[in-house]
Length: 94
Image 1 (tube, rainbow, N blue to C red):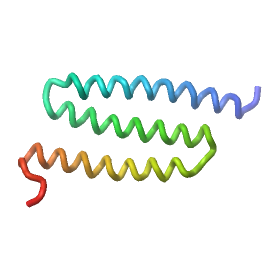
Image 2: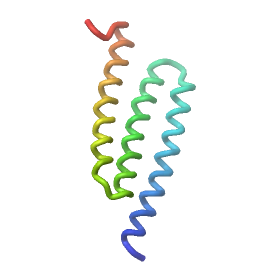
Image 3: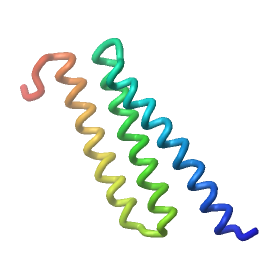
Image 4: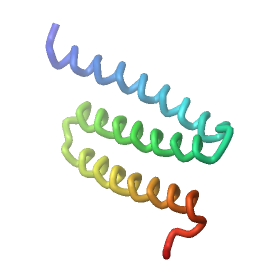
């Protein structure tokens, strides 16, 4: 068995598991008991989407996906910080 075949199978299995976790995150975001659970679900959602994009980049053998994952990571951090600040103070810009 070729090592490339094993790597592709491992990437596909991992992608399926990450997709399942994405669906569970969406369910938690929609069904969360309060706003903090929804913010944490959104944070985990973008982290899982980054993992899925990196897996797609590994599967296709392209480095362009890694730059997209980095952009999503930066935007996700800023959005989580802004939502948390809004939740604490009710205002984002002081």
